[in-house]
Amino acid sequence: MTFDPLHTELFSRLAGGKLSPEAVVETLSGCAEGDHETCTSLAGALLSVTLDADSARTVLQELVEHHRRLAVMLGSDLDIRVSAMDYATRHPEIVREPVLVDHQVLAVSQRLAAVDGLTGLFNRRFLDIYLSKELNRAKRHGEVFSLLFVDLDDFKKINDQYGHAVGDEVLAALAREIQALLRQEDFAARYGGEEFLVVLPHTGEEGAQRFAERLTERLTAVDLPHDLAITYSGGIAAFPMHGSTAGDLLRLADTALYQAKIHGKAHVRVAPSEKRAAPRHVAGIRARCYLDDRELGEVRLHDVSLAGMSALAGVRFAPGQTIRFRIVVDETDSAIDQIEVLAKVIWDRKIRDSEYRFGGQWETDDPEVVHSLVEQVAAL
Image (cartoon, rainbow, N blue to C red; front, top):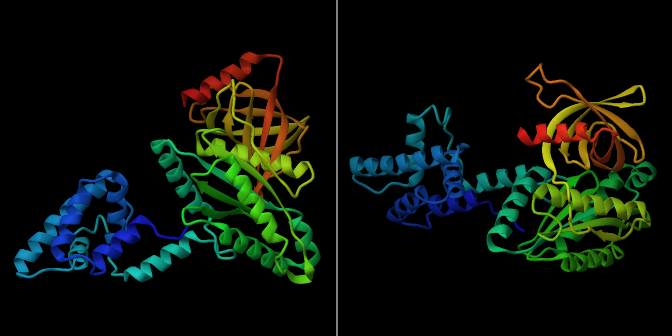
């Protein structure tokens, strides 16, 4: 996938002289009545602001009228940028300090904000935006797509033995090989550390496996310092076979990657089809954790179900540990009692430096405690 955000494209068409002044006004009028995404993107492109959909539509409608009034007053055609700048100076509540920026400069700055500096792939923030759009597109058109997690094996050893400069070269080389395999519609991002995520539209799990095989073949021929030979472990999850939300797909691909890691590395695993009897509920609540009588600190529960949970933490939890969680679901209501429940850690993954994700299975003799927790989370 090449970097071509919607509002940069629109800005280029409207401000770059490819449309007549009359066509610009007609295009703006149509956009003002169009979908939410187009309205917000175009308002952002013309005024360099971030607005909600309703505000963006109102601003575009007002800008069109303002443009027409100026054209009548001056008796000549106007570049839409002139009208936008004049409109912005008259509405400091929208744009405090208007600045005119060439659209090519704008495109470059937006690319830099969306790209990881070391690898040249997209960054995690832009990945979240793209994945949400791809999921909505696939649902709308009844199509499939796959995620492939790629994690370099034994990367810490490379850094420790040869230094971080060599480690950076290895990461950049892996990113180049991934990029070389991408089709126009494919997308790749640095997920964190030595981990990358590839999104493959119109591709089921078998197609994702073929992509992974080609990547493995390419890595055998990469020329690296110290004659290093690198391998990776991978995890695949496909929509809709393995999950229907971005969170579920990421979690299942991540779990498949973890299974590849603990079963020998240097291969790719596919997530099992999701057949969960206990639906998960997004939690986003904090909990204190204890191992026996020792406090381990605070974590944020990511999701919970009647069967188990997953959480984000600043320290690593080891599979097999039984952790006691002390939870207050609604922190704004001091009248709600704390919930205490045990869970056995089943899996854990490093997300980025000092951030980990782990999943656990409830262990309790009183299922009503878990029922109460899940019901309160579902009601949030």
